[in-house]
Length: 416
Image 1 (cartoon, helix red, strand yellow):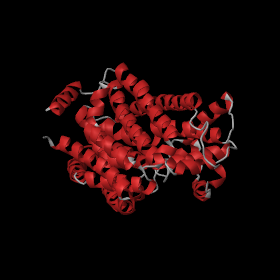
Image 2 (cartoon, helix red, strand yellow):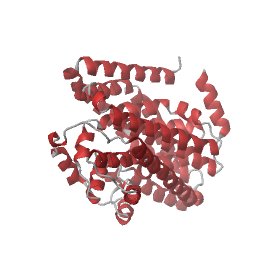
Image 3 (cartoon, helix red, strand yellow):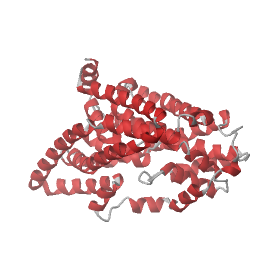
Image 4 (spheres, helix red, strand yellow):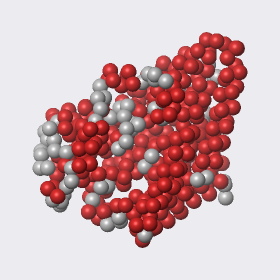
């Protein structure tokens, strides 16, 4: 059995074992959380050097500087189109299926202390604030904090300077190319610990919340996951069909990082492996290393869809009937506020709380969502990953840089 297939099998076994362990031994299972935390820390130490090295080599090493602006514009346009569809699907599903209608829970018994903490985390996300925040004051600080967008901005300027210096900068490029090779090998080593990380994360989640929590929230969980699946099928799969890229092929390529994203509810856990897989799938290094980090700031499809659905859920449980005009205003607000917030803890709930407050809606629904946020986060994080992987292939296809032969060889080798 190939090592990639063994990893998938081990991760799946760890997932099932973690669920059972969390269900049968909840008190002990919550103590497994450090395994998940340690794995996530191991992944985080890879991301900054990997993105910086791959993006610099991709741009400066392959002469893509002239096309960078065009690629960036196409990437942003694609992100906005797909994000709009995510918002619309969330809006339609919330109105048609009504996740908060008939939700049987005593709102007076809900503790609001955690929600009050989230309100203090709320930050301004105006367009000007986002633009200013893109520019790092220190690349060391950006790398330490894992700010992907700032790392991308620094790498772009660094690449321009490397190209301007010319042959004298060749030794730096050689070092960064070696760094790329080392970091991808580093990623392989870290991924060997993935089953342990998955077991720790999922068993702690189930042990902390209990299997019985699923029954009380089944309608909301079911509608959320149905909406996410519809988005993947109706938008992402259709987009791949339009550009003539096999969507099933992409899913096969990213099955390991997608499983990691689902079980750990962390985009960062899956990012290095996903970047590696998309490059093997036929997307050039320069596009992978540019689009993927940008996507984790501007293309959080799953989170955006969830925010729309959750906002209407909070209104529905409070008996508030929002007009179509109000819903459209909320959708437009979320289109802006869901950008550039990837590094904030409990990001979706922070933005949700701010949106509800802005429109004068009760925030009691956020307290209800807190109990199952980890379960919902698993789904939306996975869709975020799939959406960004699809984005890399589509941008590469638009630029006529997608290597179809490499893709066919990859899919053929994956069958062995």
